[in-house]
Amino acid sequence: MSRSARVIRHGWERLGAHTLVRRGRDLELMHRAMGFATLALVTLAPLLIVVAAADPLGRGGFAAWLADGMGLSGRSSRVLTDIISPPRAVVGTTSVWGGLALAVFGVALGASVQNGYERVWNLPPGPWHRVWRQATWLCLLTAYLYQEAQTRSALQGPERIVLSSVTGILFFWWGQRFLLGGQVRWRDLLPGAVATMLGLIGLRGFSFFVFTPLIVNNAISYGTVGVVLVVESWLIGVGFVVYGGALFGRWLLDHHGRRHTERGHPPPKEKPGGTD
Image 1: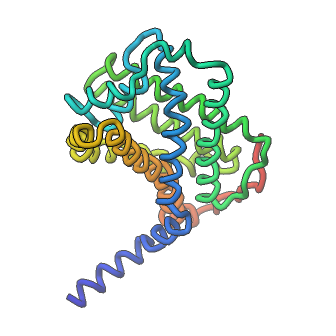
Image 2 (image 1 turned 45 degrees about the horizontal axis):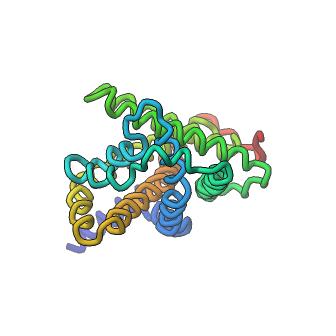
Image 3 (image 1 turned 120 degrees about the horizontal axis):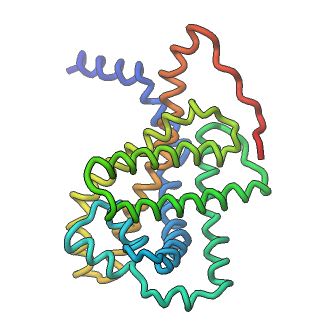
């Protein structure tokens, strides 16, 4: 047993997994994931519901994407859709100030993600006037989710899997680069984008087996509140993957990717500032 333990410990240290765990603890990964879930539910979800209600195609919008992202089907999908989908009158009853408030508070989600990426790459916080980056990221996130909702019924099978995977990797790749103000090279950010998308795929599989029956049970036992709690739990998992994927990409680059680079020319140092 002691020999096996030494082998496992040696392999653990050789992989640098202890560094990954320590960085996750320093980043307060779970705390940030819970903050992400709260902001997404309070600010981003109402904004996407308004967009879904104004959808001229009428294919379910945000509720359809949420059910698809969580891997729900059958009764659990119908329960979630009935609760999340608002009447189309929500567009007419949403005032200009209400829409502005949703957009302003939604920017807080972009600011939270930006701060998490900055902590992952040990960069100083961006200046206040970069808030336009957070607003732009929020708009592109809304467009990405809208595209996911539309392709849910338009494409099936391998075609949709490929499209969702490619668009997801491109979004998270671009999102890191954009929110960080171009301070990190594209090639250094790609592993984090791929890890984030793989994590979301794994989360969808976990949700299919765990949250599908839980949605129905909570709807019967607790009503709407029970369904919202399940959605919030899933959003915590999404936040964990978003930050954890970027962190894993940085760890992979530091402990494995740069070993090959150091044999040739050393990687160029990043400039302390970026483009606004």
